[in-house]
Length: 113
Length: 113
Image 1: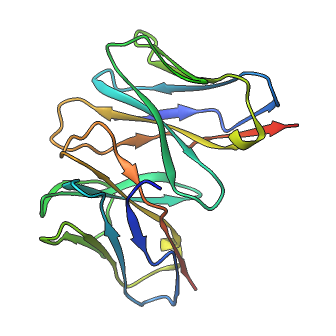
Image 2: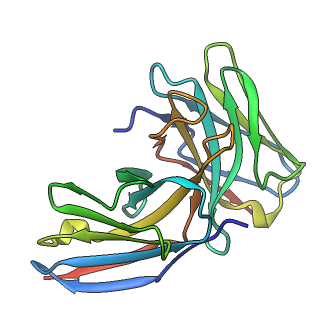
Image 3: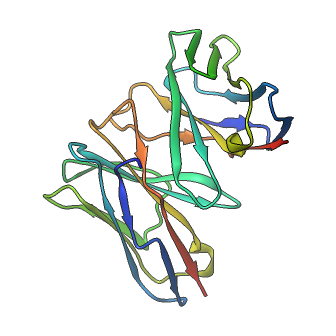
């Protein structure tokens, strides 16, 4: 158990809908990262937050957004969902913004039908 | 841009050594990582090596880094069926304020009894 908790584990929704994925980092970790894992693109970095502030952006679509709350948990919001958004979404956390060790949650499997 | 490449498949017999190879392009990488993903599970951090090191050993795992050739390898000694998984190589690039990782597409290791 990495100590990073993601909910829900599975999510099935229809095209055009909006979903929210939640991540609780390891105790003491200030930095949260979101990654998308799909068959064709592999593991892609989406966005990073550090202590409530956005720190870095990767290949995140405009339809997606995230935030990190004062209690350090983070949410990834995906809207106007398309079939191609079906993927495994991982959250990772580390102590610092450039933390050497990043620990991953179990992921949320999103299926868009 | 940054790119990390791995061969997609490796098959070994139980008890043999496995060697998973990875090449990366960014010479300013600071840390290089190996993650393990078992079916239906998250990413487990196996080990990592700082870019000024040549080798790191941790029980059955040996990481070799050839910085000149930008080549990283993971050797698993006495491979067991429980080692069957997908192994991801990842790099973190020096200088950014962010700590996100660039992942390879993963090597699927199959261990035959």
